[in-house]
Length: 101
Length: 363
Length: 159
Picture 1 (tube, rainbow over the protein chains, first blue to last red):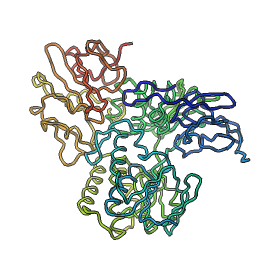
Picture 2: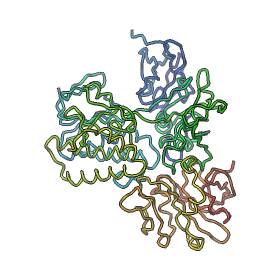
Picture 3: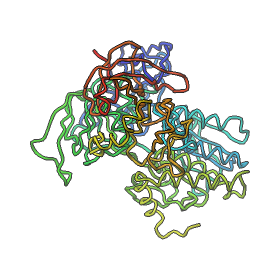
Picture 4: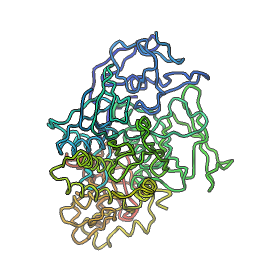
């Protein structure tokens, strides 16, 4: 659900970025955050709550609320709403407190 | 330890305006901004702003950000650090920063905390479902990243932000099914409300969200009417099918850094919650640490800018320096700020500021 | 009522319209019903026809005789609360602010909408002005039957 035409803003075509979500190859664009790229793909569940395993998405989108934590390139608790998408990133839904290896 | 005359934490409208007047007064300034862009919340505001010429009235928010940033160009005594998060604030005016994995320490002679505000939340059943976003998040998604938050949305809250973001959603082609407001009257400017009504969007006052419905994401919302005691009226429930819910129920000052130094704070609902107590020059109870903008009380960007310009000038005095137009600019911005608060929409702020300054002597 | 619904009353609306004789020439209708700290309408008028004064919280007042209906105030109101109105033969001709897609095209027939968002009539698109100075707020000249003078406020595309 990307905006193409807008009465005030212009959204120029950007460079495609290939990345992985849950082991599947997907695409985003340069300038996306991980969360916005996933949202554009229709992926809204970013993690599951620790005790009750409830689906969680982002809330504030600017790094204040910690709802958007995911495991990126093996690193947990990455605030995906403020982390820019990079080529080849491996993004996984976080299901626990996060294990640092 | 790196020395600086003034460190401004936060590169939003208030911080940028403070940087301008302070730098012009000959002070060695550093602005530390956690995101990769300056401009704070202005960068996603696509609507034209109110106020007068000094607040860049009729200019779109993102253009105001551009103006404030341009104002800081070619100032040799001004350093800007982006993608840098202040992680520690100390009463001896030491600021510690996390930047590119490095931990850097600064010794300042004065500090301005201009960290703005964060969105409040609303308690209701299933409020943690994906698809429930703050109004700022919706603006960020749409206006910065060009991604639609949903196709069928309900907006909770009819303050200026709720009304403006609803209009922006409509501009992006989203169907805003209704704006829901718990109070009996619309909170924001009526011109914003009128714009929305023309577009056929109902504003349901005395209504709130009872619960969100959905399994992996929001699929519907149950609204309920409220009586004069703000209690839900049984039997008035109605269900709306939506794919996103936008919560716009107010902002809370981000004063948390000041808790690190035990600055005096007070709970003042009119200003948005816990706020640092500051004197008439915006200085906190900790000498040398000042606060301006939403971090010291929720208002509009216009006030944040005026407060920013003023705090830069007050810091100049504090450091024994002077802006070439110190007295005339102080008078201009103090008058403008007072005027912005003079109408009916300023009443709440004035009450809040009175509560803050109870027992304080006027400088 | 405005506070609960966002819709001004008939009396409030009528109070902003000059008499029908004055409307032989186009005149600005300033639908700003609240004391908001704001004055770009006043500062953008080249004929000093909009009065606010030093205290910018005051609602703007139109000095009807000075207003030429040039429409410069229309895109400068951040609340999009100003339209230009004129009575031409049996039509009410308006210049309204418009910030949506699709943009109307001259000659098209769009819906004419009232302040409650209800379709009330057909609206002919006579002219569309969108200069850089307007900063993305188009000014659309629209004709509706004269009887809708006090009801019409904006257009909506026919699907």
